[in-house]
Structure formats: structure tokens, C-alpha cells
Image (cartoon, rainbow, N blue to C red):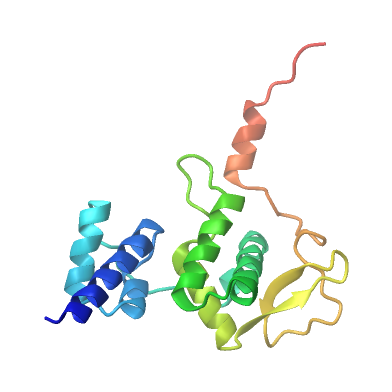
Length: 185
């Protein structure tokens, strides 16, 4: 093995470690590194103490256009676009840095996972690059939000300005409301 190939493999391993730390699935690791599947599985097991999850990656654009995921996806996409344009980063490096900034802005509650996983963020960028998804400007707040590229966007109102009737009505919200007991006056 030459010195350059050893250095290159070390960089690939470091990239894989960082991606695993951020929650990458095996398919993302295989796509973004040149390490063998066996090596990636071994690395994943060493870091997470479990086998990597099985199953296919998300392949539908629909998830990104539903209410809460859309807000998170739009925030991530805005951060990513800013980094690409102003910090001059690209590829997986831009996705990783944007995802870290997204997590700083939208930290998950203790014991919870982030709404947008690294794998979904990576998939979002792929969907945008393939022109399946794009952004539209909300006519009310002027924010930029992820939309299906084939939909009409003339009078687009985002999920924050035009909140769906069931938005935020999760089991967690109901349980929190039941635990709230007003103080006696």
C-alpha cells in the first residue's frame, strides 16, 4: 500500500466515523465512501454496538412536503444553501456541516430523535439536485419552503402561515396538556 492510499483510506474511515456519529444509514455510507460494505458494517457495530438498520432508504418526496417535516426540511435546505454559497463547501461536507447547524437550531428533546435525520437530509439534497423537489416563496411570510417541483406555487402559503387543522395534535402534546394542572387562585 502506498502512503497516499493509506492517507486516503484514513480520510475515508474518518468520514465514515463522522457520518455514523451523525446517524447515517449504511446505504449513505456506501454511497459517500469507498470503503467496503463489510468494513462499514464492522465500523458501525464498533461505534453503535448494534448492527446497522436494514431496509430501504426513503424514496418518496411526499415526506418532505408534509407539515412538520416540511418546516425542518426547509430550515435544513436554507442552511445548506447558505453554506454552499458563502462557505464554499460542497458535497457530503456541506450536508454534514448543514446538518450539524440544523441540530444546533432544532435540538431534539431528551430521548427523542431529530425530526430530520441525516439520511433524510442527504436524500433531500439528492431530490433537489434531481429537480424532484424545489423551493417556493411563501406569499405571506416570504420564507422559502420545500415543495414538489411539479406542483403549482403561484399563491403558495407555507405550513406556518397556513397551519393544517391537525398540526401539533400529537400524543406527546395531549399527554403534556393532561399533566398541566392550573394553580388555584
